[in-house]
Every structure is written in structure tokens, then in C-alpha cells.
Image (cartoon, rainbow, N blue to C red; front, side, top):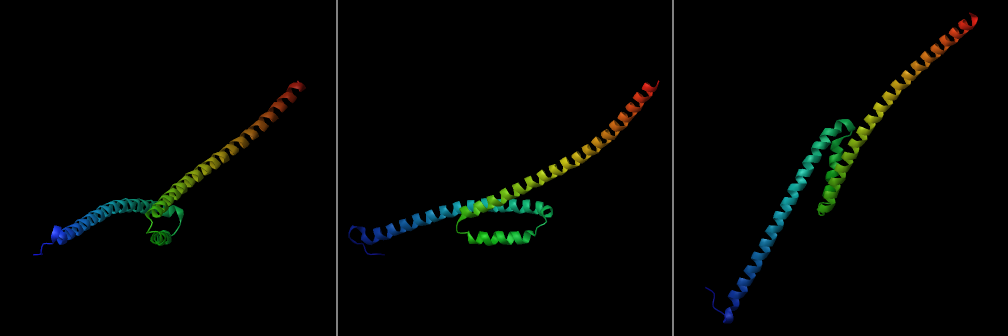
Length: 147
């Protein structure tokens, strides 16, 4: 047992240090819990991105392995700054949305071109029919004048 010091000297000193250590430990555990929640959110985002990439890779005709390696390299560079990593993930998502929009736009443009080609064929047919009708009307007029 420790000898008693005047005014509780050694005991109060050890008690204060223990209390400070306890507070620092509690603070560290709270921070770890917060970081765990953030990491869980990031992991869900990564899983969503991986699924979206797997869905669009055949349409894009790109090597997703190279893209993933590049993303991992950039993530490793910015791992000390989660805000930047989060921004990068959002950028990837935005680019995916933009790519999907471009695909839909291209499909619509192709459909408009097909419909326009059909319309051109119909107009050509109408022009031929009109020319034929005009020719018949002219010949009817010529016969009527002859009578």
C-alpha cells in the first residue's frame, strides 16, 4: 500500500491521471464508432458502384479492371482525406449517370433517324403518286379539250 502524502498527494495525482486516461480512452472509442459508421457508408457506396459498373461494363466496352485499379490508386492517395474520397465516389456516380443519359439520348436519336427515313420514303411515295395523279389529270384535261 502506498504511503499517504499530505493532502492526498500521490493518490490524487494517480487518480487524476487515471481519470484523464479514462476520458481519452472514451473519446477515442467514440471517434472509432463514428469512423466505423463512415466506413460502413463508404462500403455500401462502393458495393453500389461495383454493381452499377458490372451492369454497364458490357455496354461501354471498357476494361473495368483497369478502371478499378485506377480508382484504388487514387483512393489510396486520398485515403487520409475521406472528404476527397467521398467526392471521387460521387464523381464516379455522376459520370455513370451521365453515361446512362448519353446512351438514352443516342437511342432516341437513332429512333428519330429511323422514323425520319420512314417519313422520307412515304414522302417520296406521295410525290410519285402526286406526279402520276398530275399526269392523269393533264391527260384527262387534254381528252376533255379534244371532245
